[in-house]
Length: 510
Ligand code: HEC
Ligand code: HEC
Ligand code: HEC
Ligand code: HEC
Ligand code: HEC
Ligand code: HEC
Ligand code: HEC
Image 1: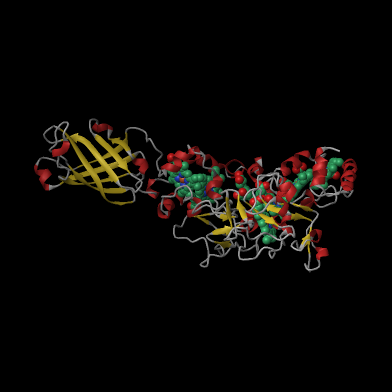
Image 2: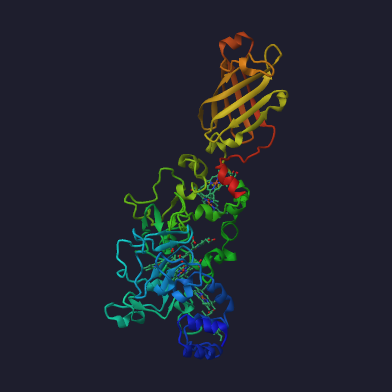
């Protein structure tokens, strides 16, 4: 008998069944019921699916302690493996533990209690029903976590509980989502590709609601999200190979910007965000959903399947009491920009993000839709006026500062400097100063507050602009006159335009 078969025996199957299975492997063909229900029996003929499935989350959902202890799963304080019957989860987000009677452990041995849910992404413990005493929280979750679950209508009748354990209110053949849970026991297995089939477990409450709590969508409701989302009329398996772990499961035929949305894919590929590796799913499937612990103010730990983005900065994703996602008249939902954008652009306001988000993929979108942008910073001139020009700086708060290197009426080199007074769209109104009084190596005597006049910059695009400067009466008296002319960029921008960045984030992603 191979090691693999021994492994199966250890996972709780009678030795006799295992040897029977060796025969079944050779005999099982069309029209015959498989004499066994163990997924390991499928490997001989469906090795690819088996090997994919084996490292995905489905088989691990409910593990006996003797299997679980071989995985990197810590125990609540005061417990060792001899006190544990099963571990729930522990694959990706969190693990919970069942005592020897099958009850879910709700308190550890510390003075404050609780601390019975291990959160894998943060490495920290949190409370799971800490208000309930140990030995009172039954395991009635098997419908979605096990194979062939039969709920016990009267859990006090222990004969309907797994191995007669008081805390497990039903029976099952195996923990985890084995092949036959989806394919049935007759062979060749039935195949149900509908989203409803996945929705038997990836659901919470009524499918036409999206339950929420604590500022996040709740977990195991991908079907609810999906129905209210942009792909609600499609199957889950349009995108997912259901045998594979989610990260590896997206089919070659379901690459968003290639297979289905190629025009958007092509234009998005030209943005600097794409260069930085920001993918479609980073905005369209943000972490608005939470299983174990939030990873940030705008980051749960599960990617939502809503896909639509709400570009209204005043929108609230949740109902007033926070217990559901708002749906429109067609039952559709949208994720708000706090999740879609602020996870990365922490310091950008929703109003500012909205300027960029509205019509995000419109290739004709210009600065006129956005206004003064840091990407305008750089060196500008009019080639017909070679010898003078502007150094411009627009910061993240859209404050503009400009220096004009030019000549005075007397023919001497002169610098004028301009600072933003007010702006409207792509127009910046500035006040202009003419510093004077310093000398070479010692600017301390300079008066920087001498007013020269006023001016206006406009930037219809990232590479073209216009400037007008009007001297005040005193400066006119000295021979200055009003000027107005077109500008263009001398050097290409060092940063993308339009742009605004959280530099820390940008650096981290480089
Ligand atoms: C001895 C080899 C063998 C074993 C063991 C076996 N299968 Fe199959 N399976 C086949 C063959 C051959 C076909 C295709 C023949 C057919 O469609 O009738 C098939 C077809 C299927 C199909 C349908 C595929 C389709 O395209 O319609 C499913 C689902 C399936 N098997 C699941 C399983 C599962 C689950 C197990 C384990 C419980 C299993 N098989 C064990 C050989 C095997
Ligand atoms: C979560 C449900 C689920 C589980 C668990 C599952 N399958 Fe499948 N399987 C499906 C669905 C749905 C399809 C159809 C996929 C598609 O159309 O892309 C499928 C397709 C198949 C097929 C036919 C197509 C192909 O990929 O060859 C075979 C064979 C198969 N599964 C075998 C298995 C075996 C063996 C296991 C266990 C190792 C298994 N499945 C576990 C849902 C499941
Ligand atoms: C019988 C219940 C059940 C059904 C049916 C089911 N799932 Fe799951 N699924 C689960 C559970 C439970 C988990 C969590 C497993 C874990 O983390 O240990 C899960 C996890 C997943 C994951 C994330 C874990 C990973 O492997 O990366 C994906 C993706 C997934 N399911 C896709 C699907 C798809 C697609 C279908 C339909 C073809 C489907 N599931 C049908 C119960 C189910
Ligand atoms: C309606 C089906 C369903 C029910 C009922 C259900 N779960 Fe789950 N559970 C899932 C699915 C699907 C996932 C994985 C997808 C997700 O979290 O979004 C999951 C994930 C989990 C995880 C995290 C798995 C991991 O590997 O990180 C734990 C722990 C868990 N459930 C515990 C429970 C407990 C305890 C109960 C009963 C009190 C329960 N669940 C009831 C469907 C269900
Ligand atoms: C339009 C494509 C698409 C459809 C349809 C779709 N998914 Fe997904 N799903 C994805 C992508 C992309 C990911 C992220 C994979 C990754 O982590 O790289 C994902 C991730 C997941 C995850 C893991 C989430 C996480 O953050 O780890 C689960 C569970 C899941 N999908 C279940 C489902 C279920 C169930 C359905 C149907 C009700 C479904 N998906 C429909 C594209 C899709
Ligand atoms: C996964 C992280 C991430 C998310 C989510 C994200 N961004 Fe970005 N974004 C970046 C990074 C990194 C840069 C830096 C690129 C650069 O230096 O130009 C950037 C740059 C930008 C730029 C300027 C770059 C360009 O393409 O010209 C705009 C505009 C922008 N983000 C808007 C948004 C909006 C609006 C959202 C939400 C709908 C969003 N971003 C969501 C990471 C993200
Ligand atoms: C930086 C965030 C971000 C990234 C990355 C992103 N999108 Fe979008 N996308 C948006 C926003 C915001 C909207 C909503 C625009 C509106 O409502 O005016 C949108 C809208 C859409 C739409 C609806 C139709 C339309 O043109 O408005 C589709 C389809 C779409 N995106 C597909 C994609 C694909 C495919 C990718 C990857 C190639 C992608 N998106 C990458 C932010 C992003």
